[in-house]
Image (cartoon, rainbow, N blue to C red; front, side, top):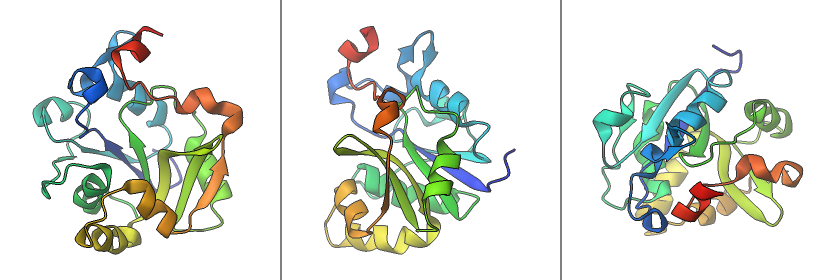
Length: 186
């Protein structure tokens, strides 16, 4: 256990079109499923893991007892967050994708130190915000309002929240996604 009282929500419900529709979190990378790399990188930084997934729920339960399907039928990151966020134990929640195997071992410390107590702080690498952020559970209403307004783009919601942006361009490799079969080989 760590001293931060932070839960981790791993988004593993994507369609994985560039990965031949394989369940990306379960795709092997260096001998282990991608989600296992993510969990290993974060296990000493967070207290619990909640996995948002839409298939292979029983397999994901090997990594966390809290596997939550997206019940909205929208099946995007924002609706996955809306479905799984209430299951998180703590008010502060680290949200990450299942396909970032190189996450740094000081990620939560960096987000907390630089967040200025904002309800949302997000990692940016060069000019692009990453699907790696620390949010407060109180933002669930905002997430739901966005979805109810038929707005499903995660980054559109993030920008509407006026987040604290933490530039991690100096460690860009740590936030590299494995998005395709090609990425697995590199």
